[in-house]
Image (cartoon, rainbow, N blue to C red; front, side, top):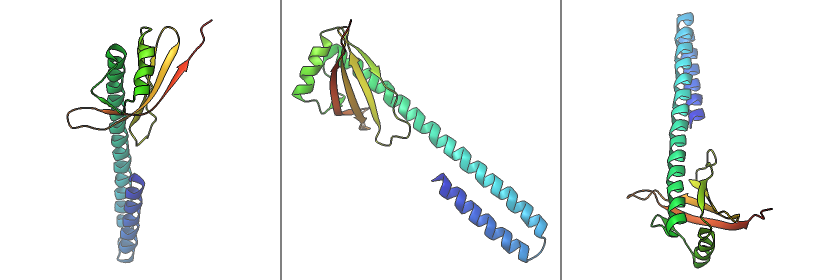
Length: 157
């Protein structure tokens, strides 16, 4: 989006410069065109940075809410903010919860438009449940859908 904006500004500045050059005072119009071009590029860069900052804040909010959901699953084995739980998932979750679990939330991939986050529930015996969650932006708060999960076991020496 920003590249398109900057390209249009460049095109407009070029057209303005060629028009001004044909009708006199070329140096003044070139200078004004150059200033307009610099302002347009700076505006485009500032807009891109603002959009990137907003996306980063959304990722951090998503990560925070996913961590809360992971802790809730570790304590109660259920959450009203998680859709898509199957019987197999509930059974695997129960086996993880038996060994005093804790939750870890992986950092979302930068630029992931799906709004996914990975939550890992692990316990002392070395079992882990790796869940891929997608936020659903519910009107009453954050809700997640369980897209996939994988149960893993680490051998302790």
